[in-house]
Structures are given as structure tokens and as C-alpha cells.
Image (cartoon, rainbow, N blue to C red; front, side):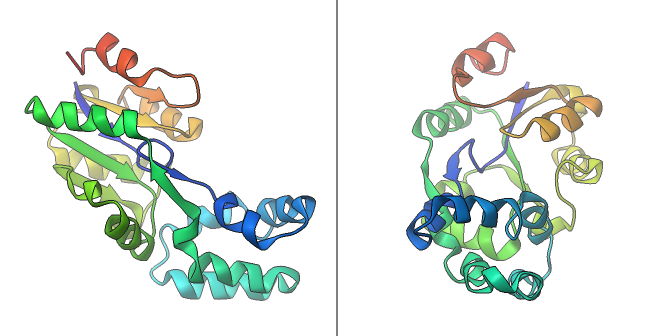
Length: 199
């Protein structure tokens, strides 16, 4: 099995609260903002936007109450990015050291991925990366998985995908690519060994 990693919250921690906990004095208002103005369906649309900043500016016009805070999602996006998940990064490097190819399949705008790569140079260590902002389609849309299969030159059943999002995991499995739903409490090393991806 050849491993395909999602990046956000599998290899690197990401959460808008890292930024907005510093911005909002009122936690209830922050959560309302994150559930409406910066809802994940909007964040997912920015992951395929040709112009990340323009997409954020357009959103701000729809939520004048939160316009200033929405603009910060572009201006201070780096503050939403946390530190590497070291134990999973170590697994990535073990796989590479064993001579196995390792792929990435992740939702990022082109601009935000460039920022993430500048901070975390290990994001260049994959044999290939399929990033939503580069290909114009995002998980869980089947199209981005098909791009991965073609670029990797492998059948879905030869790959093993790791993602923190259950809809993305289900989409992967529906296309024949086995997947691990990574979340707190999951021992990723044990899962990879059990599935024959890691010795």
C-alpha cells in the first residue's frame, strides 16, 4: 500500500480559532462568526478560488457585521496554521526512508499552500502533491481523487488515504481507495502497520 496524506490536521495543525481567539473578546460571538461568515463551506470554496484575497473580500460584503474579521482570514491567514503533528511527520519520513513513494492530497488555496510551505519545508518532501487550488477541484469531489490516481499511476486499491474529514474518507472509499479517518485517539502507526503500509 502506498500512503496518501491529507495535510491540515493530519501533518500540520490548522484551526481558524488560533487566529480568532486573539481577535474576539466574546467567545460566543467568535463561534457565531465561525458558524456563519467563516463557515467551512465558504472556506472550502476559497480552496479552489483563483484569487484567494478576492474571494475573501467578496465574502466580507455579504457579512458587514464581520467584514473586518473576514478580511483577517486573508491578511493573517498564517495565524490559523499551527505546528506539525510530529508523530505523523515521523511516519511520513519513515515511509520515505523505506523507499516507498508518498503522496499528498489536500485542500488549500494556491496562495495559502505557498505560505504553509514557506513555514513547513517538509511539505516539499512528497513524491507528488495534488492541491485543490492548483487543480481547481476540492475534496470530497470525486474529480480530485481521479487526478491523484492518474498522477500516481496507480489503481485506487493500491493507495491508502489518511484524512481528518469523514466526508473525504467516505468519498475516497466510494472510489475504491481505502482510507483512515484520522482523529484524536487514532494510533496512526498501528493503523498503517495493520493495513500493510508500514513495516
